[in-house]
Length: 563
Ligand code: ATP
Ligand code: MG
Ligand code: MG
Ligand code: MG
Image (cartoon, rainbow, N blue to C red; front, side, top):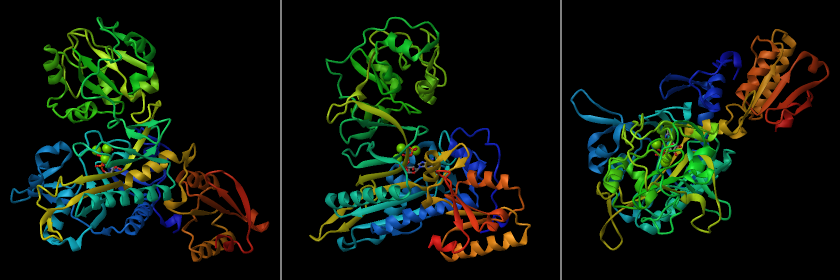
């Protein structure tokens, strides 16, 4: 590829809405362009990085015995009605009608479609197990698309689905995928961690998220300092179903702190809780019962999360109604007293980063912009207590450390959640009809590329790890107007390609400074500089993008060095 022929529109400035470094750099390096909120065009360089990532994912899926197929993005509503998800999925599911008034949605995931396929085709135990996957565009109408490719509405996912005869088989399929994911993320050169994830109603430890470790991550990982235990705090075993008598109560809170700004220290002192509590999981207790929970990283408190956190199945109401039921008073939940709830729910990482909390909630002050409860009043603070249950590891009791992570992959044992309602059955060896046991496994391919940049960049731009760098090397011709220099550069370029090096030749008629800046910005691992002065000395200068280390390679036998 020649730079002069390739569309790499680099920019000096990052877009105004870019909050995280990957969004800034992907745009500045001419890799993506925003079409509209959460929807991006992948430009040639961006697409190459995505395709290299996809190729690694594909190799590991194939190695694990999964088979690639491709399912439609448009899915008929009837399947979703059959599984029950047409009602439950909510607004993330983009629904529309065709000219005949039939309902459809854009696929956010493909459990229904794949189960429909398999139930129509697979009849005998002899055809099982089977694991089918695709690498494809998904659409989720995310409530808060942001961070560029990290949380898009349209994004690329690898999704695999396994079908087994029984639980033991499904477990085997699960761990095979777990293993494959380890391989993928190792090969991509990412610092990551597999953590126990919320498996909702299915239970057990059969859901793991693969988290890329980065401060910009939207998830919080609770990791034990003493043993291997690590979980998404959404899932961390934080509280027993009933409040134990030994609850570390902080005493009745009788008055609201003076409205205004309070430091974390002040609020913690007021509540009598360790400072770390404010950025961890808090469960508020009213009249001896847990009423609401708040997890750092939560964007929204909902009853599902609450149920999981409190490990109680019978909970049916969302927080405000529940609070009211428990306390008999129209008590709203405000997090620790004095917090500005908008920040707590919507963006309370600010809490940790700037160390300030805005206290705005007086006795009858409305809470603004709270997902739940909207505009509820706080009338009583007595009996509200705060516990910090994620402080100790549920396995070994050692202290828990909280870190931030980006969820790049998720493996999930589904059991018969879809195969049962969709009647995906087979005839087993004993002649009996049985329901298949399923698993599903996702990797956010486009999010992986963004995560990779979160972990690999410096002040000058991206520092791509070789496996997903759009090109392995940029060959920079300093003076393309000089026929001799250009001729030599072209010669090296051809030799490198012949050696199988994926190289781009910067043959643009630009000043050296511009080329060096662009080369650093787009972040190819190796920069090779061909200039008149070097050639006169019989050398080509090589720079390692990561270390900045420069070496001189002799022109004589130059390409051989890459063999
Ligand atoms: P999140 O918690 O970040 O919303 P999720 O749990 O909803 O993700 P899954 O349903 O587990 O996502 O989908 C599998 C993978 O798809 C995720 O692990 C993630 O890497 C990727 N993914 C999910 N939503 C998005 C998105 N909006 N943009 C980019 N990638 C996404
Ligand atoms: Mg999601
Ligand atoms: Mg998730
Ligand atoms: Mg997930």
